[in-house]
Length: 341
Image 1 (cartoon, rainbow, N blue to C red):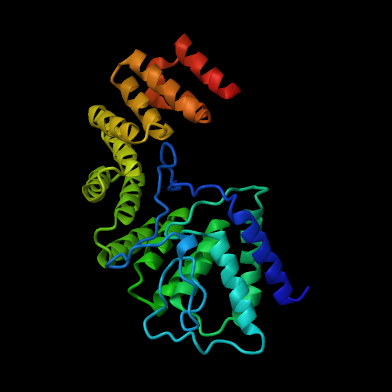
Image 2 (cartoon, rainbow, N blue to C red):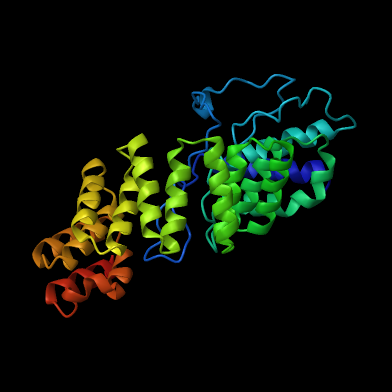
């Protein structure tokens, strides 16, 4: 199969699966009690421009080239109007179509599932395998194109390759906050926490008031048991967006680690008020209530959490914060009922 035909098949597969793609997960993959959550929104530049919905996006001009997944402009001074001859423009268009279909939003891409029958995930993995062969056919690369490729690699769990692409984006555009942010997210997956922290710090120098970067840096502090620094970052993020359930839940986790179950409960309950279907907020509230010795309330809140997300029963069974409920008949029934769901 020719290169163009192969890319065309991938593009068609990704486009067909795009409408049915599952929502991006908000998880920060780290060795914490439960994978604390991470916002998948893109990091803004110093000034965030209003983002139009993908369906309403204007068609790109010849000078702009195809839209990038990251919704970023090319590096300053990059001229894409003179790209490709000899059929290479077809490769560029097909490759960008794959990228656009595979990842409608960027910023912090979500962790990839280990196994999936999702055709979109299959297209992503095949696209990632194709990139080393076809990358040379796309000349005059921009920072945005490397950022897009990094997101593809991230989505299929190839974090070293993602880091390489984000690094290339930074080399072309040292002021690209999204590239530093995404590279930090990839580095947390490889356990390179010192380098990840340096990248989060640089992203915040470029975008000082971005709550996503503050949230993820706070989670990195929490994973490293730097509770005070974690809470400070969550406080800053919530000052920007007080309704952010993800940050509220993560600050609640930090308060629990600090031994302040009352403040943790306040954050978890506030998150549950904002989003009553937030299972992790309700689970956190249940664990805080258990620590506080409020057995009946803890069981009621845990029941609500398991009704939304039954898989949390496995975690509750071994969670030391539920030790006061271990052996309780009502607690055991809740876990058994969730396990059968």
